[in-house]
Image (cartoon, rainbow, N blue to C red; front, side, top):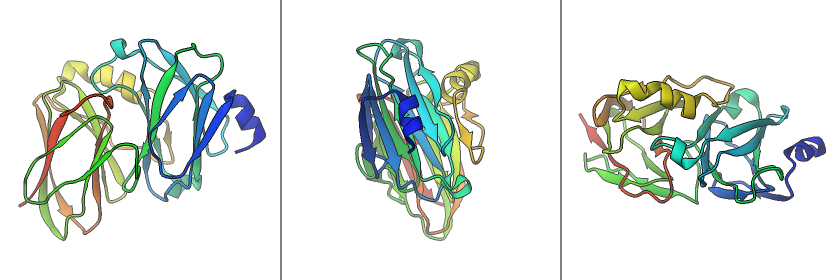
Length: 246
């Protein structure tokens, strides 16, 4: 990262992270995520406070950009902003996030990277059995499986209205909105996707389901499939996920 970029971030405390793990940033803090894998990634930024918080993102040697995350009270169940990156197309291997010194004194956000192999720490990681048995996922979590060659059914269910998450499969990212009335779609797009950085590729459009579950059939290729919800670290039993061989 260049000196001018650091200067633009206006941060006094800086940390470098190589495993995409969750980091909590306060006023004047910044984190540089390095060694990005050669695959699609989602950067999740999440507000911890009751006030709208400004933060800055710098990626691929581009000029730093400032964004805002609404207060916890102003958003739905899946809080935060998502930034879609594909280092395999851009060639970039680092991204930085900071809270400027001009932010409010109690400003606080959590940020982490999610991909087929990230993060390796800082959030809950659990394997999905291929027997159809459901596992419960929490906030700040990642569920994964490596299905052999065969057809499977993926099922994600939740009692929480407007739960948003991402499915990574064979180099693609699909955005899933579970238990989401059609009336909530503009809210989700405005809060979750309106600030999305689609650098290098465009992820699939969100799927809004009026029911309490999302079901999709897919063909396993002995490569990893990952699901990660976007919701507070404090929440537990956000929903259930299962994979069943057809």
